[in-house]
Image (tube, rainbow, N blue to C red; front, side):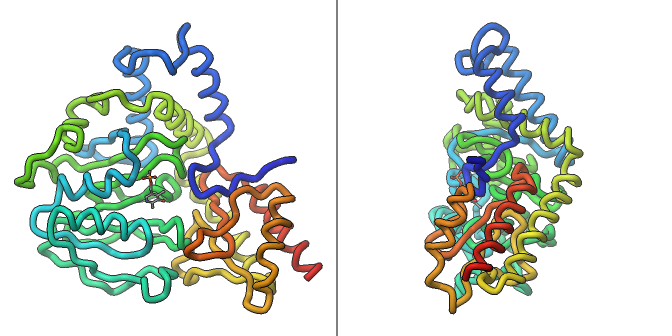
Length: 353
Ligand SMILES: *Cc1c(COP(=O)(O)O)cnc(C)c1O
C-alpha cells in the first residue's frame, strides 16, 4: 500500500535526497561515506558545499556563520543562554518547546516571559506584547510543532532575536538580518535526525562573563568550521542533498508556494467538512503542522477515523497527546498528492457518518 508520510519529525524527505544518500553509503569515492574521515578533503568539501548552498538559498548575509552540530534543538535551549545571557532574557511562551527553552535559560540568569498563550492551550500566538529593551535577547519559537501555530512574519525587536526554527526552516523566505541566532534540529524540514543547524551573527558572541566549555561555545565551532569534533557525517550529507533538491525545484519561493497550496487545501476541507474543526486561531494557523479535531457531536468517531485513515495509507496523523485529535505535518518534502489523499479520506468518512 502507498504510504503518505505526515509524521511530525523525523519526517518526510525528498526521495531524491534518500536515493543520493543510499548511493554515497554504498560508494563515496571507493569507500562508504559512513567509513571516511570527517577530516578528509572529500568531507570538507561536503561541509563547505552544504554551508554555501544553505547561505545561498536562505540569503544569509555576511557576518553570519552557519554551523552543523550535534545535540538537537534541545541542546540549543541551553547553549543559546550559555553564550548570550548575562543580565536578562525575554521569552515568548507559545507552547511545549518554547517552555523547554525558557526553562533552560533560567539556569543562566533572569528570564522574563513577555507573553503566553497557555490560557488557551497555546491555540494562538500572543500579540501586542512589549519586548524589554534591556534584555540580552528575545527568544521565539516561530512554528509550534505540537499546537499547530506559526509566527508568519519576521519580528521587529529592539534586542537580538533568537529563534527556534526547527519546524519551519526553509518553508518561507525570512530576513535573516532581523535575527541574531536561528537554530533547529534538521529532522523536520532538512534531513534525517542527528544534526542541528545554527545560523549566528558573529558579533553577538563573546559578551558574557561566564566561562564556556569548548563544545558549548559557538566560537569554537565557527573557528573549526563545524569540525571541532566528529560531526554527524551522514546526516549532513543528506542535508546537502535536500538543499540541492530545494534548489532544483526553484528554491524557497517555490517551496513556499507549494506549502501555501497544500495548507490551503487541507484547511479548506477542515473548515468545510461537518465532522472536523481546526484547533488553532485562523490567523495563526501553521503551514507545517495542521491540527484538527472532530466536532463535539462526532467526538466518538475519532478512533474510527484514525483507523480509517491509517487503512488508506496516512502515516503519523494522530494528534499529539496535549492537543488530541489529528495532526497532519505538511513539511516541504510532502507531495500535494498526500494532502489530496487525506482530504479524500475525510470526505469519504463524512459520507458514511
Ligand atoms: C522537534 C522540535 C524540537 C526538538 O528538537 P530535538 O532536535 O529533538 O532536540 C525543538 N523545537 C521545535 C520547535 C521542534 O519542533
